[in-house]
Image 1 (cartoon, rainbow, N blue to C red):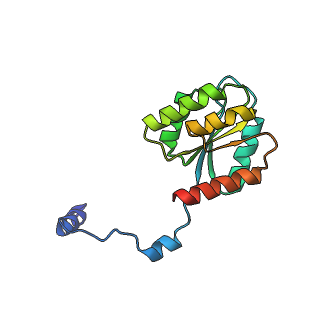
Image 2 (cartoon, helix red, strand yellow):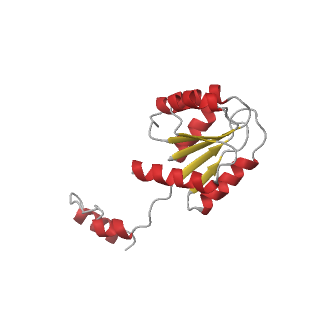
Image 3 (tube, helix red, strand yellow):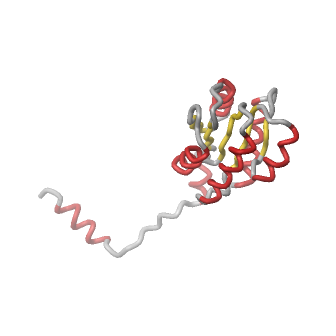
Length: 163
């Protein structure tokens, strides 16, 4: 007997199409898709405690978090964002290289067709640099002392607008 029954059944349905569309009721019963966030430490900065605190807060809020680790280049971050199909990229920058790294990352994301990804920056960012970072495409900058709840809320609201 073997697999004959399987093949004959497949032949019977050959050329027919099944309705594979998901109904509205099925969509309502499905769990919501988790927001996928990539947390990265670009540049030569070796201090990642803040990035890990944010990663934990986002996980606790129900988001899926991918942490890339220290000393990431913009190319590495953009590639990871594509591979992980993320909704949000959070950069932790304390080194002062934000004016170089952020525009490079934004250009790479545009080149890879990831214009819809929300990019956030946290760390030591002088107030005078914020307008140019936002002009480059950074959605928001979070300075030291920002509540993790404010960051979670921003991401949730931003994601709800994009869906």
